[in-house]
Image (cartoon, rainbow, N blue to C red; front, side, top):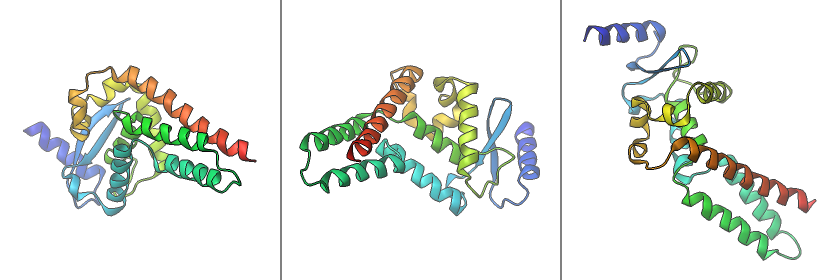
Length: 192
């Protein structure tokens, strides 16, 4: 109990302007990461970003991916002759995404919203800083080691019952994302 109170005092010193309770969450790469004790007390900016990250995780694709996808579909539909084969390929690609168990990059993105270090303003979400944080996390531990830590398993509870190797899945997931994005880029390039 004494150690817990000491962590609480330390977080109040680190984040003196926070009205909500901030707790130590985990340590990665020599850096301490914190989170709000009550996830429902996230400040609006971080809270909105958390909602967006959860939605992307649920859809298994980012907003940027969806924008590219719809742009390519619109381009195909606006041509004089509509290529049904391309539209079918895009539809199949979207079905593949929906069949994914999860998207590892989106899990990291969600974690970058919920967990912050002492250099961050806990009320704000800065995407550029979050991307650097994610890169550090990826270098520090394997996907499996990172996401099966106690606070992260609480954030994404379905990982407790995952019956596959997250590191292998991460590699497959990354390659699939690259293939899908390459396909979208190629469709845009072919149009010109």
